Structures are given as C-alpha cells and as structure tokens.
Image 1 (cartoon, rainbow over the protein chains, first blue to last red):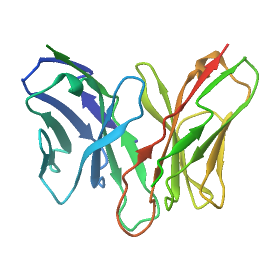
Image 2: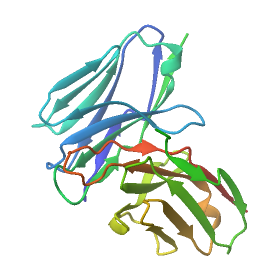
Image 3: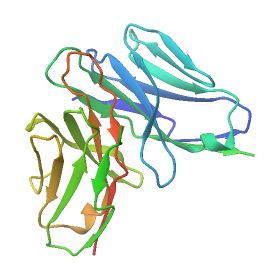
Length: 115
Length: 116
C-alpha cells in the first residue's frame, strides 16, 4: 500500500545550525507534499508545501526539495532557533482534478534545538 | 475566516461506553478528515468525508465510524470503547475536490479522549 517513510525520528541540533528531515514516498502518483509542524500541546500547522512540478521552494529559513525520480523530499531549516523545537510531519498526496484526495503522513520527527 | 473547531476538547469515558466527537470545518471547505494521534504513533488516518460521503478509510475497526452533514460538519463515533482508544483525535478540513488541485489540510485543536 501507499507509504511515507520519515527519518530521523528524533533530531537534536545546536542553535544556529541547520536541520534536515527526509521523507520517501511510495506512490508515484503523489503530486503534493506538505510539511506540518506540531508544537507541544498544539495542532499541526502547515509550514511549507511543494507540488510535483517544482524542485525546490524556500520561505525564509525553511526550504523543501523534491526529487521525483527518487521519490523523496526533504525539509531544510537553517539558522535554527529555540522556537523551531517541535514535531515535524511530512505528507504526500495525489489529487488534481480528481475525485479522491488521500494524504499519507510520515511518522514524525521530534526536533530539539540545544541552546 | 474562523478556523477548524472541534468539540468537546476533553472527554473522559469508561470502557464499553461510546463517544461522539464533532468537527466544524473552515467555511467553504467540503472535505473533513479524521486522525488518531497517540504518543509515538504519529497521525493515523481514520477516514475522510466529502459531500456527505466517505471517500477514504484507514485501517481501523468498525467500532470507528463517522458521518458528514450537508453543511460539511462531521461527527466521529467510537462504540464499545477500549483503553487503547485513549488518544488525541484531530480533524482536518480542506477544499477537497474543487478542481483547484488544492489539498492543504487545516487541523482543528483536537479532542483528547481518555478511556478509563
């Protein structure tokens, strides 16, 4: 069945360093890849997303890259800050003018920023 | 626009009871998905409703059911509760099949269910 694998499950980086989280998907029809951040006790919030017709997207300190051939995509956070500490989820879905939109989430990465 | 709302926020039940959770999507959103979140288990997909029809279903037993009303509000029901059903239940809304190719899901605050 469809699957999204996310690594690592936990990540600890020094404040100011970069953090990278990687995901691999199995459904080659996937064309939309969002990333969610969930702070402790809060709901998941969309932080960035990318569509299959784009290889990279940046938003300030956050960037996402997509390699469709290898079926993997990554989240890059530069100049990490304490408020970046959270659980991050990647996801993959395929829906474009179709009747079914199924989104599969990765298992999450707990990112801790060391002061 | 008001965000996704869920009621109740907290619930305590005992084994064998049943429970109904409610989710009101963002105005204009027609798709509502439900997820179970437990420590270390990430987001487990339960089901998705679109235009009052269940469109996708995860691997959960039949004790878990849902429905969607004409105003897109959705309810989730769990019958014969078990201790293992204790979790945070999140719903998420999206535009759904709108021809716009937009799948962004917006999550509600969740309902924390504790089964004793």
